[in-house]
Amino acid sequence: MRRWTLSALTVAILTLVGAAALGTYWVEYRTHPAGPTDVVTIVDVLAGMGFYAVADELGRRRIINRRELLKVLVRLRGVGSELKAGEYELRGSMLPDALVSHLTSGQVVLHPLTIPEGLNLREIAARIEAAGFGSAQAVLDAARAPALRESLGLRDGASLEGYLYPETYSFPKGTKPALVLRSMVDAFKAAYTPDFEARANELEMTRHEVVTLASIIEKE
Image (cartoon, rainbow, N blue to C red; front, side, top):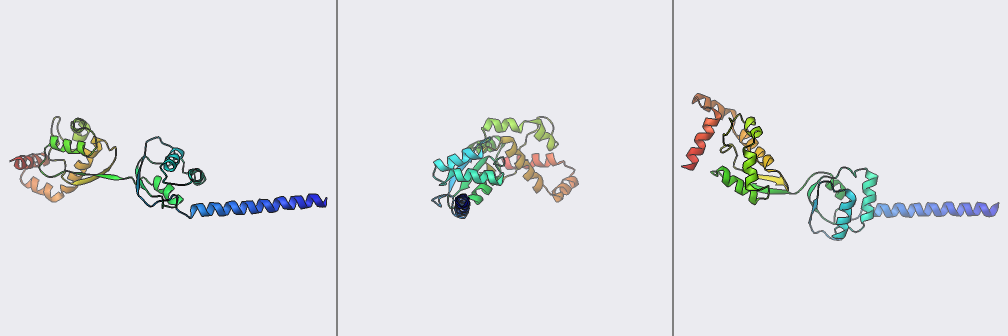
């Protein structure tokens, strides 16, 4: 009976020691950098990609040291389904929790698109293509789509020229041409203040007439 009691006590002690060691190891993992380097690396998380696949990719590229522990962390935090697609800037010097939070934040890399003043629709389409947001033809097709013109109150066949506000924009990789155009139209709407509207009314001109006149003046 005494021998059994000692054996049970030994097992209990070993269990406690093991649990303490495991706890210390886990705390050490979560409070130290996830990887060996502070170099910024762009990681492209594809739509439908799971956290485990991302962890394997990060391990393969030596951005993190212990991919299996990152998977455990994701499971314990219950964020396995919260991964958001896009390009992310990651550093191995990030703490594991910070890295996981960043990948679920949706704070993806943004790419610039600069549209100068005075460009016609085809020139704008070429700029959008050069920035990587779809082909020029796809941009022209999106510009002809009824939904976008209807949101501006334009008649069928009316051009978007003059409504695409010249500005420097930022979009994530893979942004569709229609969304790029809508952002440019929204910027125009924001710039077309009530003062502009009032002045147009004084001249007995519609917004479209004002935009058309401005486009003609720019071309001359």
